[in-house]
Length: 177
Image 1 (tube, rainbow, N blue to C red):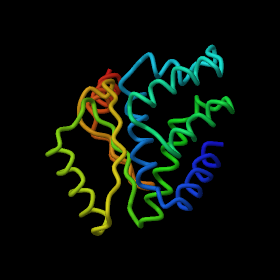
Image 2 (image 1 turned 180 degrees about the vertical axis):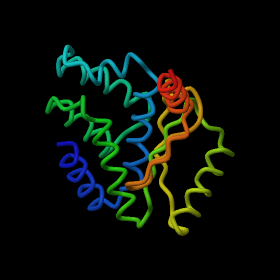
Image 3 (image 1 turned 120 degrees about the vertical axis):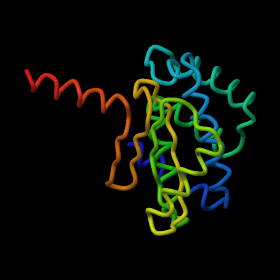
């Protein structure tokens, strides 16, 4: 379902020649969801009605300066009772834009926000690994990984998170008994 919504939005944005501005607006809204537990609850919870969600999200969109196609699309998603899938729709849209531009998309999970210098270093390292193709990074912050990175490019995944390393040590210690 998220793929269908992302595809429809991509086609509309392509017709209006606004794929990049829609992507930027959606990424802004996605970041707001990630930063606010209350907004995340509003988006994911079926308890809130359409009117409540529309009113709250419209105020957030206005305050964040998100207008045009992206704002209208988010309102349509709310009206269709699909707000819970918005983050997956945004991810699908990003992938479609990256494919259209010939970019490689990578999902990166980190424990805390990366500095601009670290983000650029990661981007350049991934660009060199993918043969010099432009890189579109989707960075998610997940404090439960404790430290390190989880990087997924296409079907390849590298998990150098501290959580995974600690779990493997714990497993090895259990096996040694």
